[in-house]
Amino acid sequence: MTTAALYATPLGRPTVSFEIFPPRTPAAADTLWDTVQRLATVNPDYISVTYGASGSTRDSSRGIVRRILAETPITAVAHLTCVGASPAQAAALVGDFLDEGVRNILALRGDPPKDQPDWQPPAGCLTYASDLVGLIRQIERDRRGAGPRADAVDPLSVCVAAYPGGTASPTRAQDVAALLAKQEAGADYALTQLFYDPAAYAGLVHDARAAGVHLPIVPGLIPMTDPGRLTRLAGLTGVQPPADLMARLSATDDVEERHRIGIGATVDLAHAVLDAGAPGLHIYTFNTYRAALDLLEGVHLDGGAPRALDLASGPWVSATPTPKAQGHR
Ligand code: FAD
Image (cartoon, rainbow, N blue to C red; front, side, top):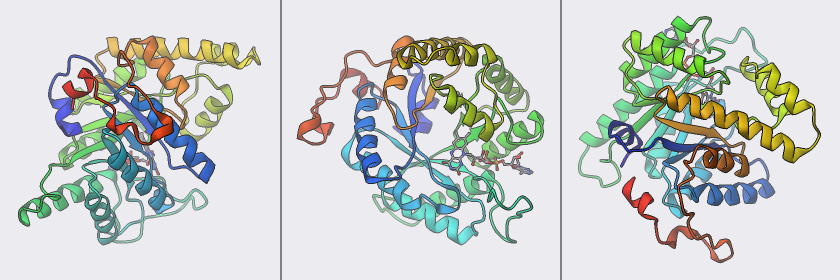
């Protein structure tokens, strides 16, 4: 089942998904793979793999996506960015991923170069994520029309970004207009940037629906256990963490106590967005598993009995799938 179909059919439970990023060192690669295996124990619906704008992590992103596809039963969603790319360059990138079996793409604009505040996309380059969504759909039509190639006929699922908290645009209305443009270009569902206020998520969904956006909008949650990380993310995204939570986290140096406080707050946020009708939870893992799994346990979405992990003797892909995994794939 593609990820798009997954949101088209009621599952009887919210989806569970994770974001990971490409490792920067060989040691980090080992840690990441351990994380993937641990995350797999809750039978996630998909794991998304980030991609550096301008192709800075192109090869490592591809490597991780390829390994997830080859060695696990998990659906991999490949993030792709288009900022500064010509249509031919973007098409080649998409083609490379499709040739490796990727069928699920998170189509993003990407951030312009940080050291060039006046940067403008070169003439003829893709400008917005909606351009990339349209290009992916064109490639899909071309490949599906090109003949009975077994690797070319599966439908693609295209995800896009949405912004409940600090906006990617000057106003919420422009954010919603961009989301509508991505829907019209062929997107299937949206994942949100991190946020801390459930009303921000509910407000985005409300405004999007009023504008004609019918895409499932899946909230992206960060486990709020590390005040230093929350401060850094505020600098990057403009989304401020709650002052009272920051005060409670900063009042102790005990890592376990911070974990308990942060997971409690994130579980409350997850319950609130699920109560508001969220179709699933997408968790920003920062390549670690404990906080993500504790969060899911807190909202009772941790998949019941875990898979039997045999980390010492190779890929656990040979482990017998649980009934839940069979039922949802
Ligand atoms: P767009 O939807 O193209 O929007 C960008 C800007 O253009 C907005 O201001 C919007 O209002 C405006 N705009 C859009 N369409 C139009 C139009 N038709 N006319 C006029 N204005 C328009 N970045 C990475 O580099 N790698 C990643 O892996 C990555 N993963 C992400 C995952 C998620 C879930 C999210 C939320 C973000 C991610 N990002 C990633 C960051 C993202 O690339 C940046 O936030 C980027 O600045 C905006 O990307 P977008 O796809 O939302 O852009």
